[in-house]
Image (cartoon, rainbow, N blue to C red; front, side):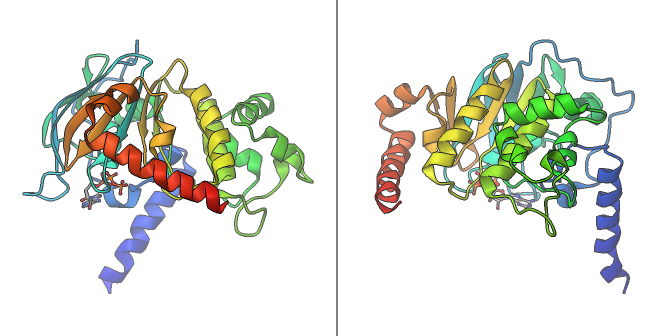
Length: 300
Ligand code: ATP
């Protein structure tokens, strides 16, 4: 019987953690898997982000012993740069992002932010410095204003509205009967995938983190919504170090650097133009997706 209760205990713990506002909503992604795995090092100090320089140094990781998912990743993300990680399904793209947020500890190598090893700083300070726009945004059964305000405790109404404007969702909210007091979720207004993602962007704008992880939704948005969201995302990337986990290559053409991951290793990296000229895996993926885009456009 105790087997039966354990998941409920864990859910209760997750719920209380969220209520206390201890963690960012981004931490929802895979939280249940990782709730108790990572602990602060003895005497851990807060992270001080000065420029936002990320370095993966020979990073190795596997979820299960004996099966490496990341096999020695070396990646330098200069302050303020946007780096996109692309590659086949299962290559380890999301895993890379989870390690930066320290959902798990590395099995080898180092991951530093402005020279500080993320395993040696407090988790709270690390997570305060990183904003995640996840694939699927979880909304609370509460008002849309509350759902945005979740990005930062104590945000004022004016700040919430500014964040909504920045995320291009203010117009939508202002057309609702009760504006920011309109309830969303199961018994309230249902938001589309694109609208939910804008709520996540608004939350992130309120949090105003120097480092950003964008985990692109796998489910295809229609091409107009995609173009609108892209413009909004490019706006919030400015001035922050950004890692985009991308499924659609059309969304990463603007990145400063594109990293192609295959079976846990970086097999190519460069700008969009450089990678096309290489005629390797990226060029092949690009050609395939371009064809799919044309077919989708013809069907719309
Ligand atoms: P996709 O494009 O499909 O999202 P990805 O490149 O982001 O894939 P990851 O999600 O990082 O890939 O997964 C890499 C590998 O790690 C996969 O083989 C996956 O099965 C495995 N994996 C992911 N999460 C876990 C977990 N919590 N426990 C065990 N294995 C996992």
